[in-house]
Image 1 (cartoon, helix red, strand yellow):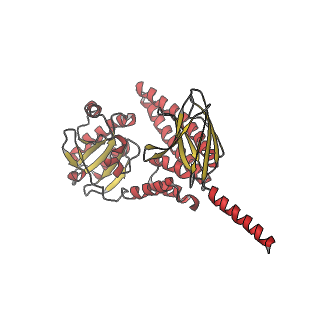
Image 2: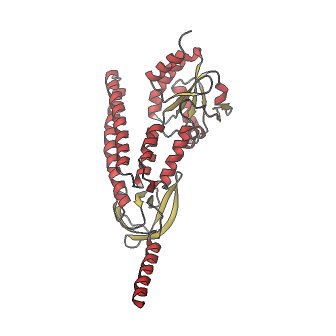
Image 3: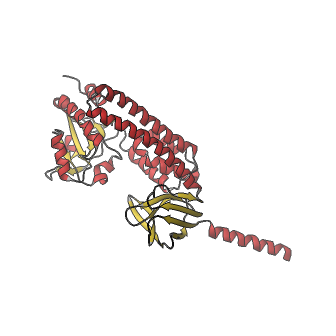
Length: 366
């Protein structure tokens, strides 16, 4: 009997130790470059860094210990708006970096971070192509080369499509990684609700409890409320003179709800197209309701004047926290929503000729 008891005790002790250790996180870091006295372990909470722990730096080395239920993106803050991002998970993680290149740490011990580095490499290649295209576009704009601009517009549209496909393919290839919902959520601004649902359907049940999966589910739910055929959610915001204006006050007209900002280059490039549409269709029951994501009132007013935007404008000057933008799930600008005379959403993100064609379809000459 004794021979059976001792192995049983051993098994129970091992199980207890395993249960105790399974959520333990240990981060050992080494810093090269400038001398730092301490660093901060941080996480992003709704756009704001939250400090989880502080560690002293001795001879360029530091250590963090704690508990972590599931892989999550963490940041090591250096105290001056510099930080090192990495995917932490319950494990013993080593991280080394130089203070002159915090975006290129060497991380070991985290399989999630290895997947994260694959994603960052893909993203870097995409950005290089993006810079090439937009540099060429700016040159063509300065040269007023309409033929070149048309060609570049087509190439940029094709590139953006392939960029999105590559991101979705990455997620499809890593269905059990906690990095996957982070990647899809980070790029959700470029996807419509059907594309997000398709990407979400590839997730393993293992990662359904991830913070980023929950955020993605919330976004899908939000977008479902501002889909085509849905009543446009009403809101009230102040115009430049401080007078409250409600979206519902335009009922009976076809309204282009236009999200933009003075600081947004693509928005300013698109404004002449919106001006053309406004002047061509304003006598047929069409108007524009501009919502600015600016935070500098003077810059906002100057852009309205410089671009000849002679329709109604509102803003709460809260930048990306603009209440109307959040209500409509806007994560990138320019962005617009076309609303019919009954207040129903009938189209989204119409630009250039597509906007003119849609208005000609629904507002023909009398």
